[in-house]
Length: 424
Image 1 (cartoon, rainbow, N blue to C red):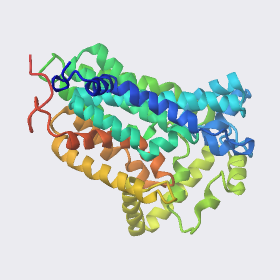
Image 2 (spheres, rainbow, N blue to C red):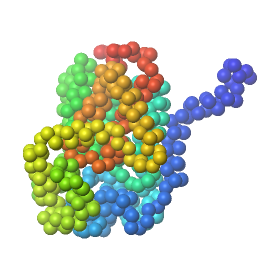
Image 3 (cartoon, rainbow, N blue to C red):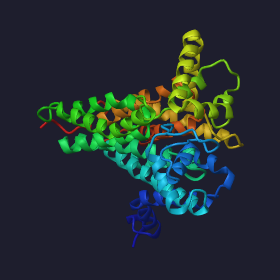
Image 4 (cartoon, helix red, strand yellow):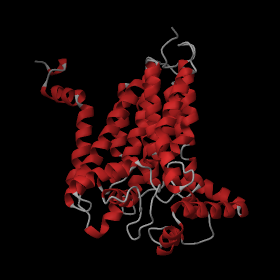
C-alpha cells in the first residue's frame, strides 16, 4: 500500500480521528473533569452548589422550593430559575444532600450536560456554516477557560442554560430547513425552556419569533401561523411557574425574584457591596426572613431605581463599564490569567469579524447575533459579579462566529448569499 495514495499507517490514524472527531472531543470533555474533580468539604457545599443547592436541599427535606440560603430559613422562594434546582433535588434524593456520592453523580451529570452542548453546537455550525467550521467551533468551545472551570470545579446552572440556548437555536435551524407547524411547536417549546433556564433570553424572544416569520414568508401559506404557535407554546411553558410565583409569593414575578436585589447591588453608594448580598450579610438574610422574599426583592428594586434617578450620569457610566467588563472579565487570578485573557480577546476579535461577515447570510446567524446583542443587556443594567459564568452561554455563540473566520468562507454560499433553501 502506497503512502502517497493516502493508505499508509499515518493516513489511517488521521482518518480514524477525522471520522470520530466529535465523539473523541465529547469523550475527553467528560473524562478529564471527572479525573480532576475533588469532592468539596462538608462545610463548603454552599460554595459548591450555591443557591441552587440550598433550594434543592429544601425540596428534598419536604419544604418545597424555598430557602436559597442555608444559614436561615427565608421561606418560599423564586430566587433561582426552577429547572436546575429540581434536577439537583433528584440527585440529592437518590444519593443524599451532602455526600460524596451526590457530588460524583451531580458532577457526572454536569459533564453529560456540557457534552450535549458540544453535540448541539457541532450540529448548528455544520448545518449553518460548514463541517470545517463545526470542528473549529467545538475546539474553541473545548478550550474555553470558563467551560473548563464550570464543568469540573463546582455545580452551576450555566451548563443547562447553555444546552437549552443551543437547543433553541438548533430548533430554528430545523425550521429553516423544514418550515412545518410541528417544528414551529418544537421551536416554541425549546424557546420556553431556554427562557425558563436563562431568563435574560426573554429579551431575545421578539427576534426569535420574527425569525420564524421571516423564514416561513414566501415559502408556506399563512406564514404568521408558525410564530404565533411558537409564541403560544413558549408562553404555555412559562405559565405554570409564573402562576406558582403569583400564588405562593402573592405578586407577579417573572421567573426569578432576585432582579431587584442585583439591581440595587450594582447601583448604590456603598464602596463594599458584600454587606448587601444575603450570602455574606446576615442582616440582609434576616430582613428577607422577616418581610418575605417578594417584599425584600421589591424593596431592593425601588431602592435601586431611586439611586438611578438621582445618579443618571453615574449609572450610564456604570452600564458602559459593566458592558465592557462582561465580555472580557477573567475568573483566573493566577499566572494563567494572561493566557485566558488572550483566549478571550482573540475569541471576541474573531467573533466580531464573523458577525460582520455572516449576520445577514443566514437567518439563524442573524438570530444568534440578536441574542448576543439583546440578552446580556439585563446584566449591564444590574450587577455583574460573576461575568465569566453569566457569559458562558454566549461564549458558545461567539465560538460559532469566530470559527467562520478561521475556516474561511463557505464555498457553496458565497458572501451575501442566503443559506435558506430557494422558494418553492
